[in-house]
Image (cartoon, rainbow, N blue to C red):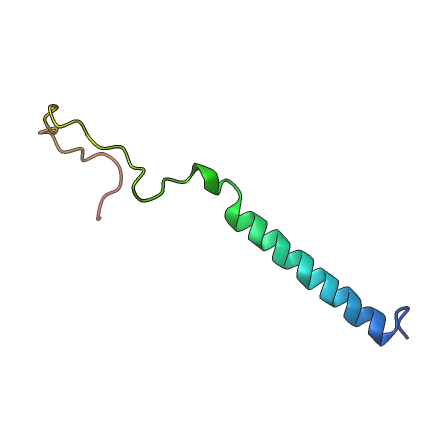
Length: 62
């Protein structure tokens, strides 16, 4: 037999689900103030020409 009644178990599960929802919400939005939003990107200087050399370092399709 369980140490908790059925009502106590349901209340405990409800509380844990609410806390889990709060934890997931915090994890998703933690650090989001540093995200680059649309319209906040740096506009490149028009007088500076683009690089003519393509950077091929990094990931490849192979």
